[in-house]
Image (cartoon, rainbow, N blue to C red):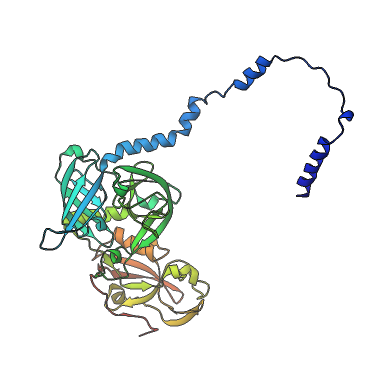
Amino acid sequence: MKQIIALMVGLVLVACRPATSAPPPQAVASTPIDSLQLVRAQVPTPVSEAIIEAADAEYVMLSNIYERLAPSVVNIEIQATHPGTDTIIDFGSGSGFVWDMDGHIVTNAHVIDGASSIEVTFNDGYIASAELVGEDAFSDLAVIQVQVDDIHLHPMTLADSGTVRVGERAIAIGNPFGLASSMTVGIVSGLGRQLPSAQLLSADLPPGFSNPSIIQVDTDINPGNSGGPLLNSQGEVIGVNTAIRTDNGVFQGVGFAIPANTVRRVVPELIENGVVDYAWIGISTLVESDGFSVAALAEPLNLPVNTGVLVDRISVGSPADKAGLQGGQRLDTVRGRQICAGGDIIIAVDGEFVDNLDELVAYLLVNNKPGDVINLLIVRDGETFEVPLALEARPTDETGETVNACTS
């Protein structure tokens, strides 16, 4: 600041020097006034076409993706009527995309939940009635079907969502606020999130089963985008847009999509059976978001590993119970809270290492069905060994009694 003040003072002092001390002006070569004005009037020339093309390359790609794939995205309108009457009690809208040439369309379960009639509007404006094929609350996915000419059907291609990385481009095409065929662009901002999809759809379903491996994006996703595709730069579906985190119902920078690998597992089963059977182990673990992941507990509990699934409780009569897995054995205090520690730590399933419960559930969802036998790699009392476990179907109601040695 002193330097700035000093400089200002210096300028003032120079301006205040007596004129008599200045040397007389010297003659210089004369420059025509017209020439000076001509120089001032010149403006920059346009940059080269090469520079423009390089700068616009991303927009050319996005326009190409939109032109190719917007015809695959549909608008879905539903009506719900009072049981036994024609009185409309609810209506809603969302998005979806063409799955195959048989007229199957993928959307969110919450988009068509409770619908008495479903109408699909294609990108070209053609409207068709649709029938519900199947819906699954746990994944928040549904399949509907239309009977239309092949000219309206443009199936999309699924990517391997297991290869998606934070920072990659994330493109959404859908119908936010009823504005048909809108595109928004952002990036993947997080992976491995969980959503309590079933609890959001129905209070009658058993709690504790989360939708795993959810993709988080900053791409604008607003009401009406639900059920539409989330795409990568190749135009492949990496997820199905499903939810936003908001305080006022409008997008605030955090959106979520069901990963393509979940879609690949669930949709064919919905088409074939109308429902989805999930494999079930029958364990619970401490809540990671509360600071009780294996990584967070490794030091205070002196655990031999810093990744995996620390088993807290076992459901009585569950596959885990039958296989001999053990829940918590002793009470410990960590950061002022008592927890039941000493249970088995699952570190791998069928040779695939898992960092947490989300990865374990995601692996079972994508790779296994009830009746399969898996091998769990377990750490117990400092020793590592494999435990074979026969998977059963996920219960459709409360799972009953759970025990650990701390409370049994």
